[in-house]
Image 1 (tube, rainbow, N blue to C red):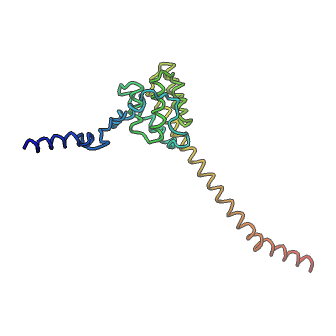
Image 2: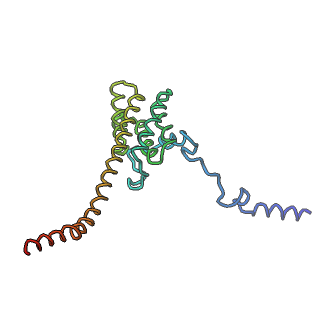
Length: 208
């Protein structure tokens, strides 16, 4: 019996350490910054330690696209968040959490810039040019003390009008581009079937 007990003790001591703790290489993954859902996710991304807003984590060509309509929608959401009493950084984070991927990317950069101490005008330079109306509205509201929500709603309406006008102009250009090929095709046929026979008849009459 003593020999058996000694053999068991030696077997336990000789067993690999990793196996006694749940297998080799097994570990519990540490939580990632911003791993919670909703505004907490964007907030965690925006306040990641050591991440300056000017650092490009991804190349500009890999950033998701953003449209004028998505920007206008984000401006309305931001205005509503500000009217509810949220601070600017929190309102930006919450708006980013429910916006399209392209809008979220820009809003996270602006939020990070503000929390790093950038001014309002400097912070919006980290967003793409499609946010120019938002940047102007926020800068004017910050410098004049006007209500940011009201200025944002006016800017969003102007953005939607500009987008609708651009779509209408594109439709008009498309109509012109469609008519030109048709004219180039039908004009020679009209000349060949109507004008040329008439000229030949008139010339025949004159010569006769």
